[in-house]
Image (cartoon, rainbow, N blue to C red):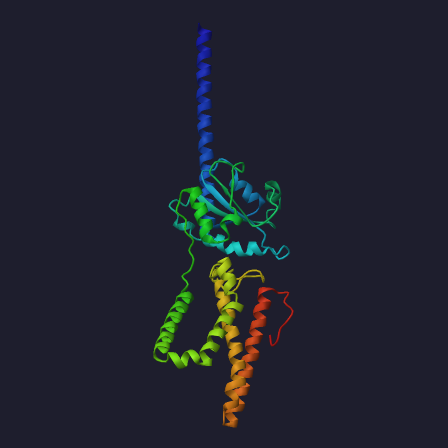
Length: 329
């Protein structure tokens, strides 16, 4: 009887010790998880919502248990790879990540970026054969459960990526794209121009419609629009602007196979200046009666022509450093 009681007491003591140990282990795990979440929040707050990763950081962040979700951009921005789609989508991804502080609960979703140079082992482990790739890792699932963003279906726009991510997280995610003041100004300009043309047509319809200057202007405008890439924009629907490396809006997209809206407008203005200088040299300057003014006009328009053409060639060189031609600079 005494032996049974002693055995029972030993069992009860062992159970109590195991319970205390289990409780302490659980508390330690909760503290470690809370510490990891706080560290991720600090990094994201300092880097516009993005957590830059390496192989070790990726493994640590994705490891279970995990009470938060991760959406990771696997990219290759290095010059030795020259991944143009990576360069195109990177600012769109960061535009969505920039809205991370506005999420309903910033501890439930984090944005990560893993470059091939810093994550070769992870790329190999996940079987990544191309970039960019975006994987969504739900909470507490480790690397076993993941959802891939389909670029061929959704495209490279920040809005489509944000919509795809909102469906998986249940949170409202909106990209913070800057307001396009230039587009608004151009729309107002074209509306006012259309009203002015309508007034001229109404008052001088006969002589105006038969005039060579109207059709010359219409033809030149159509040519500028088409050769600057407007039709490509109409088909592909690229973003008007993309964030640059310092967070400001970039004026061009890298590579001759890519472009943005503001880039098309810049090229159209350059072409218009080139055409205007040539037309002035051919038609306006010879009609000047004052020889001094005529000579000054020749020098001025030639300077505009040469400088503008040099800017155009430099623009091409900035898009693709392999472009071989230049003029002044």
